Image (cartoon, rainbow, N blue to C red; front, side, top):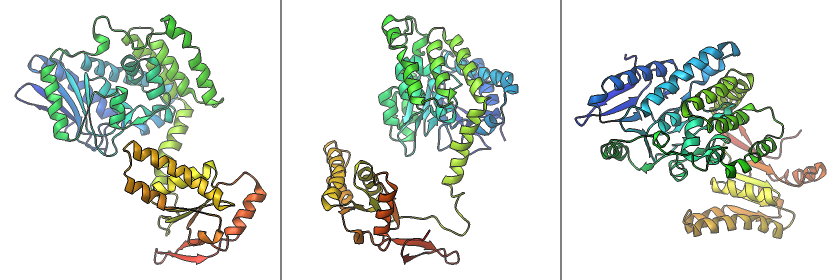
Length: 445
């Protein structure tokens, strides 16, 4: 087994294709093997530079790169700050070597590139994304109490500008589909097949032998200006004010660290900016809040989504007919989402007119979708046909899921549940047969 997860393939024209393939994991992550492999690979690229005309980086996995190793991050404490700083600095130094190699480098993004995956791609001179199912591109670190620590803050700011990077990539951790990433400027091209992706990557290398990052070219300026720019500086106080408003006093340091790293990093040269980003990253990854968020929003959520919270002997429950009680703003939106998911929906309110008004919300949405070409008329008609507005509780018969969206009054809630109780079905499961069976009536308290 090779101790380098970067597979090296050079063609006759001198283009080297580096294929990331961690032999011990289903996805590539920034673990110890990655770090060793990256150093060794950059050493070889540097040594053989004269015989190389360009580099393509891609992956043998379904995803391009999954990001940092969360298992390792959970074990990091303030006592490890020095080692974490050294490791992240080493990775950033190698990615900096890559983008200043003096040869064009293209990221052939064959699947999801989140977190560290996008950071690797941002260190390339061009990013070509495959439009494949499930592919997402972004920096979701903030959702786990972290910030991009391998150059993601520094490079997105220099690529997109401070405001665009903060609002569309960093502060909310958006995950963009390839077409959305293209429109935003995170990638340069979107293709339909793996063959086209690799062919276009090599074609671009041949056409751009002198490629360099925008920030390494003479006269470069950060899009939208820096905090020293008077027009930008006038708006800068609104950033922390809006952030405080959004956080509502919650003890979440990651957004604040991201904002600080972005603004401070824009005032200095790129290498100093990397150090600033690193300091803010180490503070987060060695702290307890990030560990809590990683555990809750990644590992615990994975466990739940895989059925880990289901009692033994009970299969996954699948609803087919949904009763939505209340056709106001919330109930109407819930009815639309359920119908869009393919469920039959009974939308009940106190009068037929009120229920019909709730369905009208879905009618407006599908009409707009059809007009914009996002939905065919046949599919729009089918979606609306799945929503039945009613004032008659008897129409709820056979519903195996009830969602209550009535006015926040305990008395009213008791009344509506009492009204539907004789009509809805309760779904049970036999542990012996593992098949659901239905019995009338609502479970008693």
